[in-house]
Length: 119
Length: 116
Image 1 (tube, each protein chain N blue to C red):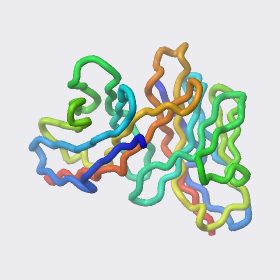
Image 2 (cartoon, rainbow over the protein chains, first blue to last red; image 1 turned 180 degrees about the horizontal axis):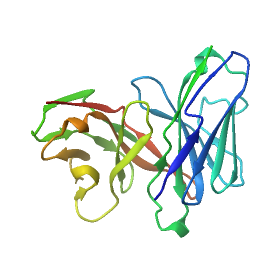
Image 3 (tube, rainbow over the protein chains, first blue to last red; image 1 turned 45 degrees about the vertical axis):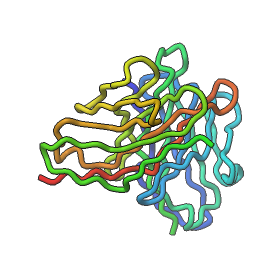
Image 4 (cartoon, chains in turn brown, green; image 1 turned 135 degrees about the vertical axis):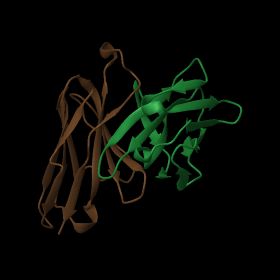
């Protein structure tokens, strides 16, 4: 149980284009989803937190117009990197946390990550 | 400021020997602490957590961690290391984020290398 998937696992796009990454909770309802960015050999940096049906809360320094987050349902959140540039190349990881009704109010379950390369 | 520190970038241990991966924290209030493991090009897998109760927490794959309030530590341990344990380990603490939401703050990670 508590599986989170991400699609795609790898994506290469050209500079200036936009790319969408999906995060799905497969066997539970996720009231809250998180998006992280991880640079090589570094820790995870929280980008934003989204609650289903409301606007995402972005961490300081993260451009909300560049990294669009949509949490339209209890099982799906999307991250769209708009007008991507090479410096946006990174490993993006989502996580999802079940709601209180699920009984598991503490863990976050992580997706396998998406490797974005902007050329 | 609330933070998590993993003082060792890398820990080397021989297979069969006990291993310890260190973590210290700084939070206000009662800490909720977690350990995650990451294999190359993969997301994080949950190992164990401390919320309350017994200071020795047992988790997945034979790992355990000891919560020490006086030393503000939550070190990850395993009695006998396996080569397959080689991975990147993250300690994390849950902190309030506004309203009913909270978030995890991660340490910088410790690379565990188990030699056969």
